[in-house]
Amino acid sequence: MSDARSKLQDLKTRLIEVSDVEYANAILGWDQSTYMPAGGAAARARQSATLSQIAHEKFTDPAIGRLLDDLWPYEESLPYDADDAALIRVARREYERALKVPPDFMARLSSHMAASYQLWTAARPANDFARMQPNLEKTLELSRQLAEFFAPYEHIADPLIDWADYGMKASTISAIFAQLRSELIPIVEVIASQPIADDSCLRQQYPEAEQWAFAVEVIKRFGYDFDRGRMDKTHHPFMTKFSLGDVRITTRVDEGYLGEMIFSAMHEAGHAMYELGICADYEGLPLAHGASAGAHESQSRLWENLVGRSRPFWNFFYPRLQAFFPQQLGGVSLDAFYRAVNKVHRSLIRTDADEVTYNLHVMLRFDFELALLEGRLAVADLPEAWRARYQTDLGIASPDDRDGVLQDVHWYGGIIGGSFQGYTLGNIMAAQFQQAALAAHPDIPAQIARGEFGVLHDWLRENIYRPGMKFTPSELVERVSGQPLSIEPYIAYLRTKYGELYGVWGSFLH
Ligand code: ZN
Image 1 (cartoon, protein in one colour):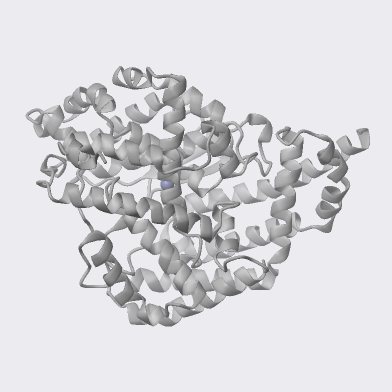
Image 2 (image 1 turned 135 degrees about the horizontal axis):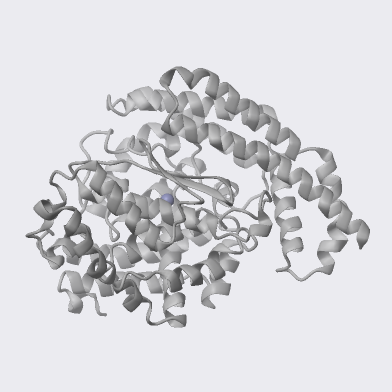
């Protein structure tokens, strides 16, 4: 056993070195998206690629493979949920995955994605899908090749989904989404038959300094620790981590619309609190990450939507917000404001969509990924298929591609496959986790109405944040809620909240 201990120590030392290089690279990425002058771009791209390559080489060193082999009996001797067993298990999984993709393919894929992203930044404003089409065809081809390295598979999308949401498959996700879609479409129809909520109170002049101060006050109360994080401005808000003691968020401010920055700050703070809550013993190891894309989104959306758009939250914070903006909001009632931040309407843009319609945007993208990968849909036919599906699911369709098929960066700066399901899985999980938190602490809503978030935050830290990547997303859901992933809590949440908001209780009860 002492031999196993020294081998485990050797493995940890090597894995920490890999993450040192990766986190150094993350700092370069953060700097590039926040403060780097434009003149730094070319060298920064090269520096970043160099560090990625060094990290990859260090991680795929055969010495790591030998250590993992040698540690097999030790892992077998431990309980499944022991830290050491989880570390060896997750490290082996990632090691085997990294070995399957040849480095020269990875280099080709990265350089194609960088070029494609560059092209997209010009093609989207120009509404020029034709310019992107050959590029997207190449992306599809490379995405298929990437999946092939992991053959055999049940569905060609499975290996790509697995990367983001480990253990999930196209078949299981399709089944969950079909169920969700059949529940959501009637809810959207009932709400759309009601007068549309008035959110003009959010669309006034809101100076940046006050928005910033309010958002900081909110996320500090949530428990985002500014001694272990910070917030800076960027174009597309994101969270990034350099260690378990330094997890940063970024945001953008629109002075003409209050709904942008404060909710994006809550969202990113939700991601950051997840990472900050991971067990400190995992520092630098593969366990020190959120369980999956879906699990991560569950935490950003729980804080942004289930908390940040809830009535108890605004009972406490609305007077605070009015104190920041007496002229803009002094004459707007809490009721009117609450309705404004929960306005439901059929819209074209996923990132602007409300809680109710959002998943329809995600599910159609997921279906298109499967159809493209299977070869059922040609890239050339995608813009028209996009319009048709928007018409069916949301009742509106964009006349142009700029706000249609060109709107998301995912397929233009990344691969096709596994890019979107995490958002909706996150919404589903968030409601299931919240239900479990409320079962343990029924007074959480009353605490939120007093501006107290400690009990909720502690419960999330203990049950969801602490284990990091120790469990698969399915295991995490089962352990936390006692049940497999289910849309029931999410649908119940939407029915209750929006039934009340739109005075349509009866229509939702069946
Ligand atoms: Zn997010």
